Length: 352
Image 1 (cartoon, rainbow, N blue to C red):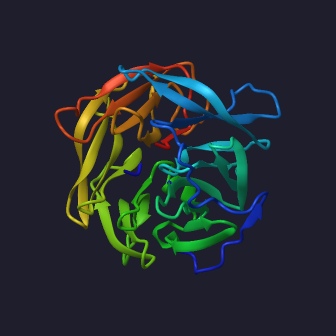
Image 2 (cartoon, helix red, strand yellow; image 1 turned 120 degrees about the horizontal axis):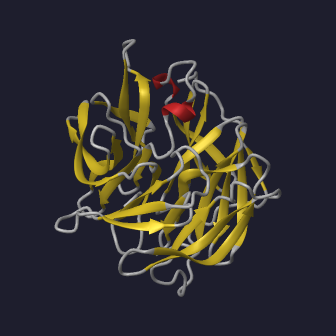
């Protein structure tokens, strides 16, 4: 399961600190079973120097989640912030990757969970980075370099950053790619090398019409294989693909806030390759004052969870109260289980 056009040009990248992203270093005793890692930003009133924190997450049988031991403290530059739901760990590997931006540049940090140290840092100057995917087989990181009129999918392997595909042509020239492709607006299946990208108010090929769309990207050929127009008012808060490795059957879903009903729903795309709507599977009321976060990932003890916090979803801060909503893909366990949380999660991912 997995749980972010200008004329083609070379993407300028600065690579800092240590060298390579580890690929296949897995010890016989690491990771231990059910190792679940979370990352939180510094408190909003924290003095400089500020730091983000990676820590273990623990959940009881009622899905009540608490912070465990600190794994790593990541120093942040002035104005540098964690991207929401842009944190991934390599399943049954040793490392996690987190992304940050400060408004003018972005960074990817590779952190060894086994050794509790920073392994490498990659800077992408002049762009905002969010939405991240980690290839289970190779350990390569895929993310989005975004700017005004710019949306480029890039792959990071070791010191090398390469362009996978430039999808800037689906953006209006004056639109910021970080707004058109917001946090949570992509998902991928490594088993068939497919990436789905949600683009808000996109320019449709061959016309001046605008609509919310999903791009189906063939990563083997670096081409757009399908463009699916979404029904009016439909856009995922966060996307998720249910990837069946045995059958190579993949279904795109995700979370969405439905304001007319006052609920947050998990659902799937329903329709054709060219036109689709949102088919809710399960829903939960959103209490007044809470907002649906782009965070959507795999926990221990359920297929997925998403978060509701008392800060706007675009503001990575530390609220005093939130709710985690746990769900499963298959009946009869599709009914949500909701539990309170008293700390902010920018991201969470399982190593085992």
